[in-house]
Length: 354
Image 1: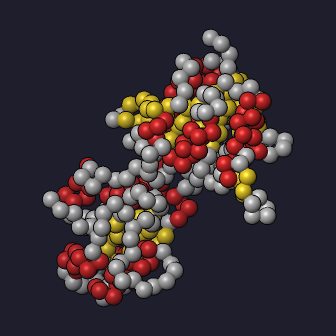
Image 2: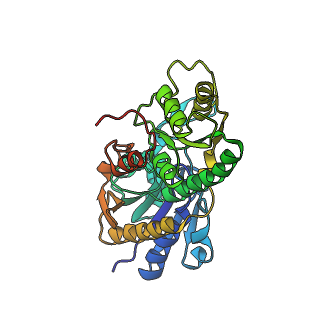
Image 3: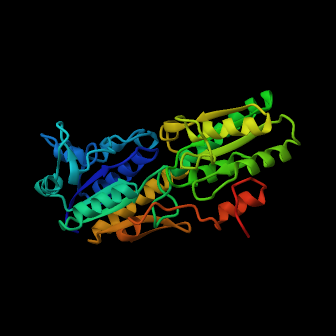
């Protein structure tokens, strides 16, 4: 087999499991296939710096506790669009050619991009026209990358939501409060749905389904028999604020807590998890799919296959055309299994018909 030189980088927001992908790519490429592997630091920004921020990766360099470690050893970025790169004076410059030329100058035969749907769009635009072979590995706590059932980092974030609900349940019971937990997810409600069901929430509010604040309050009164009693509510950060909400600033979870306390006369408190959902060690399932994705990505490049997104579909690792991955964000299907499960458990999830 022809010896190749491949690059690996992480792009977009961090999450648990990124290092496990880097380890798998390096172990399989350098250890099994005896290729050269380089890591690009800080996403595409590492290619725009002088000197370029590139490190040689070997089997020895990814041993130890790397698979267990949170974050990314290569660093990542959510800024600096190379097609409209911001200057210190406020100007923007197209520096996409510099990124491409930097990759070509180090002689890479392929690139493994670990990122979300935004990163896939960026590198599809960068690498495909330039003829640089590449494969995408989906990672995001939001689980909103089209083409794959699950992305690296998602289940570790869900585990944090579930654990947080376990902890909030005891304090809610002690004070007989409504505890609102706001979680991440941008335009998608996957974290809220999976975490809310696993954590025993009484209501889950997501961007995909409209809710009625008065009906939610009525639901709370029903399950508490109209007297103070512990209630757990999960709110995705992209959920809409209650109609007519005149409060300025603050999080959507705080707004919902305010309106529910006003309508139920039960004390309500809001906890915003924020970046706690991104940090920490990946749970076992994220380590599994991260490892499987990394190996599959290298196998695709070994077969000279490019422009694919590694995916987890119905319990197996496969791959799809990258064009399928850049149509996001992927949203929670309102007639899907998680919604059916929530409704079957009596969880208020909004106003659905049928």
